[in-house]
Image (spheres, rainbow, N blue to C red):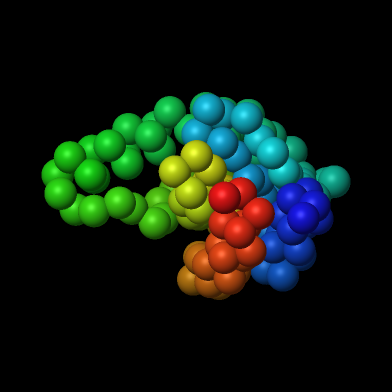
Length: 120
């Protein structure tokens, strides 16, 4: 599976999609796509946020809420949906402020099974 093209498919299926990346919890991206006119650095974002996502996972598990599936981040400029694929990898989808979070979540959930199959 070409992870870069899989990330591109996700971005192209959502209005206001900017970038998408499959990232290890070590902060290293194994597949990414960013629209050429977008300035967001998805790999840098993934590297910076992988530690935070690890802390959120540990906290959720320690509180006995169970292993989380998704996280969401929103600001004035972007919306980001994070979906945990395996214990080692997650996907980050970056959208503009008008992006539909529900559709982004749906697209990542659809991609989840295929990505898991390739990663495990």
